[in-house]
Length: 211
Image (cartoon, rainbow, N blue to C red; front, side, top):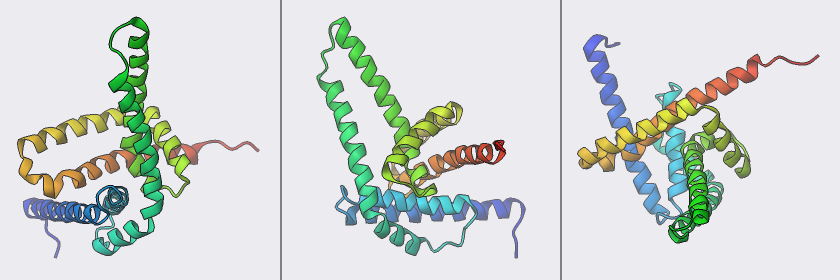
């Protein structure tokens, strides 16, 4: 029996709420299972993998088994990527913390580091969607997360706006953080990234070939 009207919309909303809450709890459990540091990357990859399936309309996917399988299979590869991102981010943090605030030269250097830090954040926004959508080497994830982020500034701006709205909601209602924080973030980033992937793949299909 298919529900319509308000009943159907309420059912769909309730279904999404339960899905996101369950996925968020799984993310917390598996992150802790990896002692946080080693569990964060594979758990986040697993979460984005599940959310990607939902966005594509695959609503009957076995969530736990897919989450666990992805977590196990991507444990080493995702942690390798996470280590690279951590080291690069730590270097940027040290630079900003210890560059003197006085002097024209140091001001220019600080501005340069801030620009690089902003681009680094863009890479972070696209990293997990790119990771779960394509099967590439680690170096290619870094490269194309950057290229896609700067090639579609409007959609990237949409990610930042969405992050701001999500942060505001979680600040106002902190009680929902254990149930919806990371899963809502994954849904937001994956949904926008899928629009970018669609545009890129459409351009690739429509690109004229040289005979």
